[in-house]
Length: 99
Image (cartoon, rainbow, N blue to C red; front, side):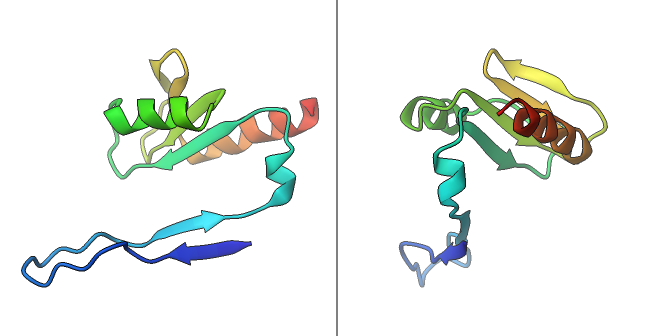
């Protein structure tokens, strides 16, 4: 269910190398009624980025949640919401109850 995708390149001249990505594969999620995206940020006040808009369009997401360590939930865009982890759990419970 969980797989780690290694970085797609190595750069020996730089100290920083792109970090690996972790993906959760679940066929049950594939057949869900809604397409939701999740991105986790370390910042207390995340902002909308170009990659978020690309993910919304390319993945045909209904909504994108940006999980952050702050204390408040706030909209970043019409389809993007910055949310705390405890609040996200409540939202997901309500989504599962509706399905």
